[in-house]
Length: 355
Image 1 (cartoon, rainbow, N blue to C red):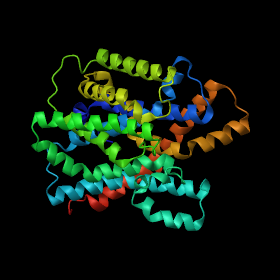
Image 2: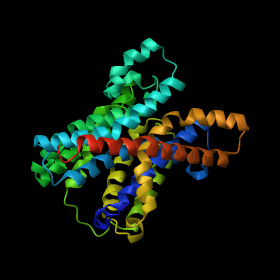
Image 3: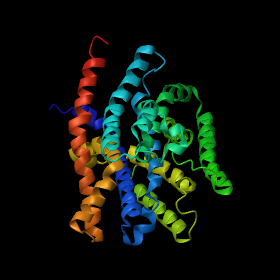
């Protein structure tokens, strides 16, 4: 394989680190809620690990704008390539995971699955909030939100490119205020959760787009010191909220803490200059596998339960290690068996010189 050193040198390796961290935290969160895994002084923080899905959406928006900021997606050729690339990169693995779940773990009838098929094929399950607990949707809802965010991205990009710096800050403030206020309404009126709501996840995505477009100048951001300060602040504030029983389980309400700190982390890690990170093939590979790592958690818990029961495994640390290793192995297998081959086939079909 030929390594493009110039492309690697331009890569924001810190964002790869952030993506891997978000994926791992979501898995540890699942270990806690499904197996009661204990993480010592970090247990409270890990119990709210679902907040890292906000990090994932913000990061996705940031990276997408960073990638396409010099291109015009108004042109139909570029727009077509953009959508095809997103679909080829997301749908094949998503369909395989959904199929495996329905066949081996699903409890819905054949008629119910047929009724759900168009919704899930099009990635519209997040629009139906009550479908979160149906079939595999509590594990694949984020795909639906991501697809809808990608659908809107060309409009987001064009709007942001034409906005003044002041307008961007205003838009950033409005989106942040909406994310702060909405969970309060949910809490006060006991309405349905907005955790898998595509509109609010789209706002997080748009915040990432705005952050990437802003001319941020700071010597503090872009250093390991800044990142560790942000990480300690996140752990401390979330842990304090859990300790004082502040709406534990209402993950979106913690956006008051998570969104500002995640925004700072994205800005910091995007500017982080670390030769070791930049040249790390391991980090690049781990980042490439994170999508599969997220998806296999859809059925990882059920497999773990069978494994733990058959082996009579009760040790807390061993259970956590097995969870991480098992999820990693399944992610690697699906990445190489499904994700990469489909990407190559899609590239040949849709992105040949003829197109």
